[in-house]
Image (cartoon, rainbow, N blue to C red; front, side, top):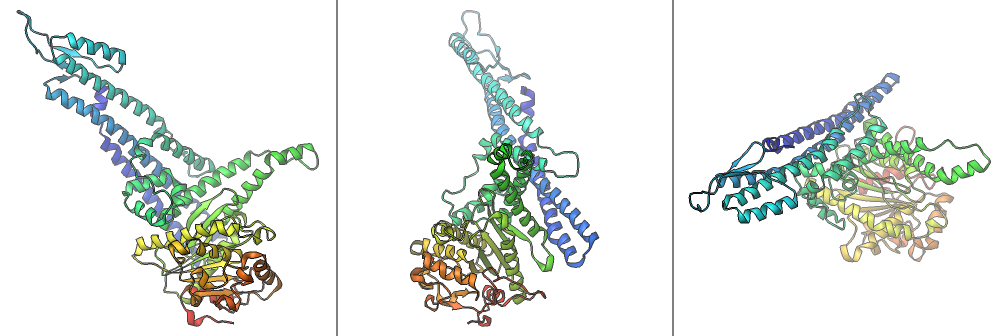
Amino acid sequence: MDFATLKAFKPSEFEEAATGYAKTGDMASAAKDSIENEVAAGMRKALKGEAADAAHYQLGELAKDFHYVQAECGLISTALRAFASDMRAVKDKLDAAIEDAEAKNFTVGADGSVSYPVAGEAKGSSQPKAGTATGTTDVTAQAIYQQSANFNPNPNFGVAQGIANRIAAAIKEATEVDEKWAPKLRRLKADDDLTVSDSDWIDVTSDAGAVRDGAKSYLSRIKEPPKGGDAKANADWWAHLSSDQQADYTAMFPARVGAMNGLPATVRDEANRIVLDETRADYRKQLDAIPKEPPLPGGPHDLWRAAYGEKKKHLEATLKGIGAIQRRFDSTGTDGLPEAYLLGFNPEADGRVVLATGNPDTADHTAVYIPGTLTCLENINKDLNRGSKLWSASHRLAPDAKISTIAWFDYDAPDSVFPEATRDQYAAKGGPTLREFLEGNRAAHQAATGGHAHTTIIGHSYGSTVIGDAAKSGLKTDGPLLADDVIAAGSPGMQAKRAADLGVDPNHMWAEKADNYDDWIVRYGGSRMGLGDDLVVPTDKEFGGHVMKSDAPDHGGYWNVKDNGEPSVSLKNQARVITGQYEEVTLE
């Protein structure tokens, strides 16, 4: 970059371009949401058949296009702002040098040289000559010029040389900034087709890394999130960022934003959907790269299994779970089901998923369902469906209320009934995480509405043990869980003898059981293995809560729906608690 180009450079033009891309991204986001939550949802209500299925598919592809545009515009906008920020710092240095030259009545030439007038004491008839200083960034040359200035009779020489050196340094720095950003900006482009492929989303991941690396200086000016993950502190941090800073931080760190309790559900959803799409593309690519499995038996097959077996299993399991999440997205509008919000997603190990049906930030009633033993991303479909069934049953009872039901799987669930599910260690580790989520849910709702929703937490089987540990983990320091009601279904014990020991009002403690052998084994087998304090489980009279009537045919049947769409007795009773219709709950 030369002097004339840098002098004429206007960072504001690039900042305006960044704003334009940000607005384009916002429009793409609005279009995606409209397609998924209004157009496609409306079609699912009114149309069925092959033509409708084909139209739904095309709408889904169009929504993916808009989501990709949104993600790429976010990266471009951040890159342009970071480039403008870097260049503004350099331009400020140049402008300051030119101002200093003009203040001394020096002239800055078109090439960045600095001409200075006659000055100093005359010796005889000879006046110190005027001259022109040419800047340099070479350290040795600068030292020589400095020495020369000490002997030059014109005092303007040294000053002019210093200014010229500053101009040369600014030009060099601007050239380095341009060389750093030019390739990064050039790569921020999509294929010239209408298909958003896996390679496109993999490029998003790569592009984000390149922009993040280049924008370190710019991003360092955005206040970092508070350490420790306190939900209220997170909410305050987010609220004090400008809209540009919020957008840039999300574009650069979607996984970090998506995992932060206390942030708005819409923000976490968008960040986690980017992570979801990038993960799906990356895992498909990795899966396709695995060589075909050799036939059994033999050494080659054993070698293949050792090299690729576990990896292939993990990739396939994760993609199966992602498919279940996508199906929930695609089912918005079916039977009146509202939009979904992906509040948590992590593909590592057995995976993590937190998905809300309906916006919890604006809900009147919120329910958080915690699944139990054997839960993993691969089989998350049944738990997501239970979240949807809880919403539908609650909506039937309170059609005018805003309801959100959340399937919360953000802990390491036991991988087997015995011996893992007999140990409290999984609940002890997951409990504080659940407590933090509830605090984040409260903080986000407070920020959105100024109040909080009536909140019910529902633990199935070992999930109720997680609730127990969540309650105990902060009872003495932070008080009771931020929940109005607690439901335990098929509980093997909550690490307490009485509801009050958990800080739970017995009038707002509810339990259900299934009168069959497998549920009995879980409840009393678990309690005798140490999950129930003094062998007491929530369905025992000694626990002090209400035992609701249940028609669950087995340990997993608490969320059954009849063929005519009518909720089962056990599901309906849960919905009555969720909507605060306590007088309608039927008890044993």
